[in-house]
Length: 133
Image (tube, rainbow, N blue to C red; front, top):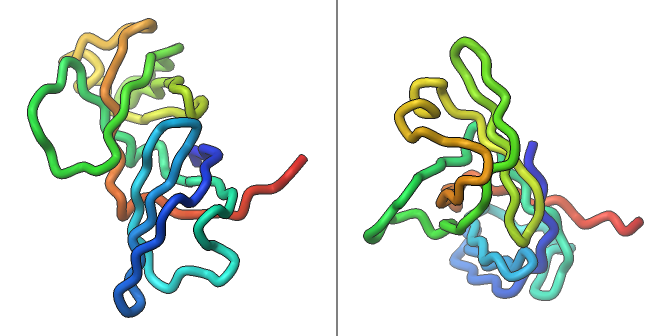
């Protein structure tokens, strides 16, 4: 599970549905969830959680898309298997990874050092309270 430290910047509520805007070291993230826990409010420090399999990568992406979570990252190492690849990424918000197919890795010709556009659907992010060291 990927974890990025963030601060809740804005909460918009409509009945039990909440739309949150987060700041992860300058990287803006948006998320949707039902029934926001009372401990999570504007200014709260949190961990934004999302699965490696929910991280979409694009190379030389242009134009508009519906993903609200779209930001740049640099590829670190790439672990390859027979079907899947584990792509390590870094951005100002931290280190995380994406699991994609080997077919996609070859089609995009991804290599360490490449800059890619990262996308995560707002509905695929969850929250955890930040734990101070």
